[in-house]
Amino acid sequence: MADVTRRMLELLAQLQTGRRFSGAELAARLEVSPRTVRRDVERLREYGYPVSTQPGPSGFYRLAAGRTLPPLVLDDDEAVATLVSLALLGATAPREPLDGSGFAPAADRAFGKIDQFLPHRLRPAVTALRETVEAAPQSAPAVRPEALAGLGSAAARHEYVTFTYADRDGETSRRRVEPYRVIHLHLRWYLLAWDLGRDDWRTFRLDRVDEIAPAASYFTPRPLPARSGTEYLRAGLSAAHHRAVVTVAAPAATVADVLKFRDCEIESLGPDRSRLITRVDSFEWLILQVGLIGADFVIEEPAEFRDRAVELADRLHRAAAG
Image (cartoon, rainbow, N blue to C red):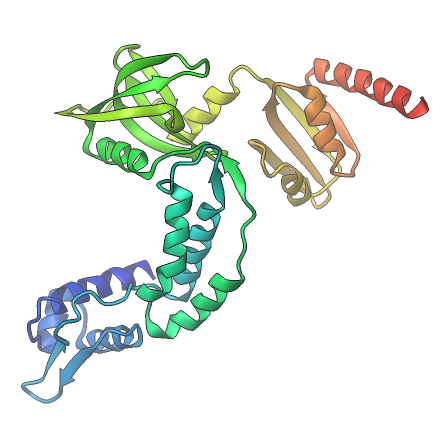
């Protein structure tokens, strides 16, 4: 599907010049057969593009005048995915209002008008979906779209950036960095960058970043410190936590559903048995979460986890007896 979409976009780029093209000329430019050109032109017409043709030896293809900005080239699944993505983003309510300038308000506005930019045949289905889909609100730190876009652009250009950063205690400092990746994890946005002042890799919460200023000077990219920015971020967030391994008498899908908001590894050991590997700062919290699965489980490691489980079991038994 991706190859077809790229080819059709190239076909549109040719037709939007306003010129008349013979079938042979378009086939040569796109490096496809004349039959493929005819098939792609029919697809464009289905999407609502007014491509006119004249048959015969002197025949041609041409996009109707005044229609150089036709609807988006989205198939049915892509249109649904776009709408659902906007609904989910719109439901991510900022903890602090941004006067209508955050991701959620922008997504809500786009959610309400996306059908205006789709082919006619998709509009009824998309309109019906928009009117019937609801996404439960989720609270998340507020991030401005322009901050995300600016840092992403600087990372793509390998451009130095300076910004003001507030740590968890509210202390601010001015940072100069080499931006590498913008990462979304657990409803938070992070920047992975090489901090020139600390001479080390750092991750920054974007809701704590302010006064972003590209430096108009550029750096040579360093190798990333992990296979991906997400892997590095996860390792950093869990570095001070305790590793815990639990075997559960339940399918991996059942365990994953209960722990869907937890960053963990779940390995299937059979149709009704799975292994959970995670890092936590509270063994008691994990015991309760695994207990909610409604299946027997065995704590494999560490020994401290087993000791905490015994203590918690005694405490619960006393509470029930009392």
